[in-house]
Image (tube, rainbow, N blue to C red; front, side, top):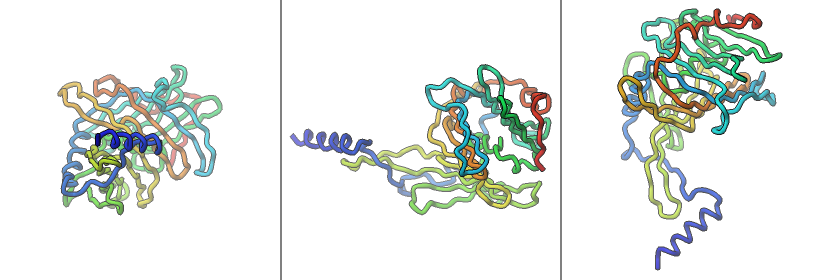
Length: 310
């Protein structure tokens, strides 16, 4: 007799509120792992992955200033067809960049643009060749911070870039708690050999949340994951923010280990207001890419004139 009224109350709460009967609350320290544990776990995953190949559904809204309405292109909807591919090959012996990166943008099976990093050519770049929209910006890797749509930050958004670890040597990760106690923020600090001083690279926001039933009060631990990354320039200004809301598991080709990576994220570039939304599918670390695919100069269409950022 007592269960029926309770079920009716729960049902009315769901129907009347028009939302889930669950809410989220901060995870208490005594039931959460210490910060170094999941920082280390994040780095272990990032180090395990040497390559990444994935179909991508991409939506980009081009803006020249944050107040612009913007020019949208593409779709990152679950029901959309892939219109891009993401390819990453790490270069552990490189002194200039951690990996070759390529986001290849397509329309009607034709390549119309790229965002990439070429270790061989020592450049990072973005170009578009679609109708009247033809432009290309590139920079040497020592000046990569001048490129707004930065492939290094794309690498960070996919969870492939280690953040440093709690230690007394650079690169290092420091931590603090958000004011509402719902998030632990890990700051990745590294020495920039081109700038000549230590710099704050990124803030990683790890959600520490419990799912709590509004009626019964029962709680369930939610996975501790990165939900937001703030990206900084050499002067410590936040130049981009990545929001991550979905993860997917991927089995490594050689070891068979299973890793979890972000599969849906949006990057907002603050200087222009441009936003880039990406949904990754069929992620694999199989060796599917020829090294020549990452080259910049050979792959740039002759109709696009490159502009060097200094």
